[in-house]
Every structure is written in C-alpha cells, then in structure tokens.
Image: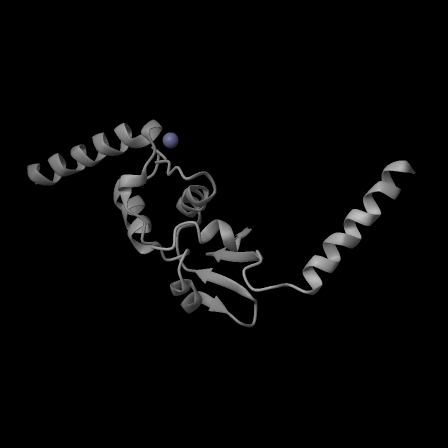
Length: 137
Ligand SMILES: [Zn+2]
C-alpha cells in the first residue's frame, strides 16, 4: 500500500498541471502515415523547425475529425524520419530503394546531410552506384 500512497499525490500534481495548461507546454501528437499510427511529443518535432513536421506547415495535413495528422506516404521509411527527431540521427535502411528514401526525405524537408556516420557511407555508396547505373543507360 505504501507505493500507492506515494503515487497518488504525484498523479494529482500531474492533473493540476494539465488543467491550467499554459502556452508552450508539450502535447502528444498523433501522426497517421498510410494507416499506421505514430505518436510523439510536439516538442520533439519542433526540435527541427526548418522541416515540414517541425513547422506550422504540418497543419495542412491535420484532420479535424480524427484529430490526427495524415500523410499518404511510406510508413516504413517514416519510422526512420521520426527517429531522427527523437535521436538527432538519421539512419539509412539499406534494404530500401535509394530513390524512394530520397523522395521521402525531400517531402518532409530533411536534407540527407544529417544522415549519421553509421549509415552515411552506405548511403553515399548507393548514391554513386545509382549515378553510374544511370550513366550506363
Ligand atoms: Zn545508422
């Protein structure tokens, strides 16, 4: 019972904080990407205000009825995009086609420069292979 008694005042304190929510407080956002739901904090997205999700541009994708942001984009690649906001590192999934990965980055306004050191070489090599393939045609 001791743990419950300790927990209750904490829960009460949390409730009073959300009741008089001031501007600038964090909130959870629901993002629907082709039917797959992602949740994150608004502050997480606003870490990068020069991107689509981090700026007010995302409001164009807000659905008042379902109270979520809807993107008709690739949910598999979106996972990596959202993780970039969380960790500050963008990873390149090697099994994904480079062109479709680039397209998703461009759509969300993220430059490939921010790809982490762990994945940058793979990304750059794939980019070069692609360029060579195009020259061969
Ligand atoms: Zn990586």
